[in-house]
Image (tube, rainbow, N blue to C red; front, top):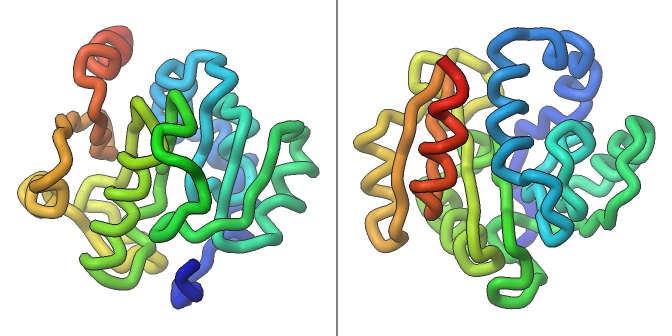
Length: 187
């Protein structure tokens, strides 16, 4: 496994701001889209989950490079399995999960090479996946990348994908039909 050089870990800040995120219209929309994508699937994992999202979107499994993410998850009622893991080198079998969610992760990685590793690993471990990342106009100081659609397409060049934009976020998936149907529910 790679050693973590992800310096701007924001698990503590995100967990402390969780209550604001749960009522924010922007975050509620993102969580609804991700929850609909997971759709109660038992074989689902949140990769780079942070401190509360798996409990909100309903994944059965969660992983994060930071071990303390598990403490936060348990405190908000997450009952699933947690694995401390680096999204750039996941300890899971090929296509082990039916669904993987990597939400608000890739913009925190240090290099484009790290992002590509995370994309390949997400694609490797799940049959169907969704990655969300803020639109380039987001100015979060913890973000090392402020992606444009063109940049995302270049990073995904060897991975079949489709990019959608809804609100303040890009949603990238290998299941175009499923995500199209979900997004059509939200004006």
